[in-house]
Image (cartoon, rainbow, N blue to C red; front, side, top):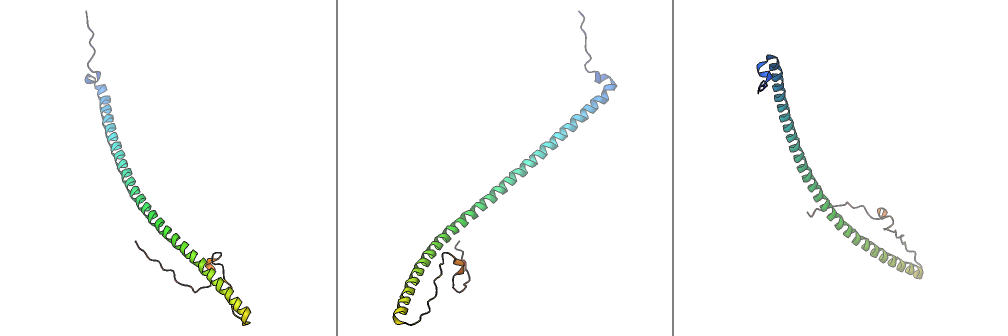
Length: 141
C-alpha cells in the first residue's frame, strides 16, 4: 500500500507564502500589543472608578455628619422656640390682665390712661413693637 504524504507546511518551502506568514506573525504581535494596551486601559479605568467611589463615599459621610449636626441644632432651636412661644403667650396674657386693670382704674378714677394696643405676636411676629436687637449665635460644638 502506498501512503500519500502531505507536505509539512507549504509555506516553509514556498517563498510565496513566506510573506503571508510574516504578515500573519506581525498581525498577531500587533493584536497582542493592542490587547495588552486595552487591558492596561481597562485596569486604569477600574482604578480611577475605585478612587472616585472612595472619594464619593468620604464626601457622603461628611454630608451625613453635617446633616446630623444640623438636625440636632434644628431640634434644639425648635425646642427653644416652643419655650419662647409659651413665654410670649404667658406674657401677653399678663399684659392683657394688667391692661384690663388699667381700664378699670381709668373707669373708676376718671383719669385718662394711655393704654397701648396689644399686638398679636403669633400672627405677625416680625412686627413686634420692640427695639431691634442683634441676633447672636453661639457654637457649642
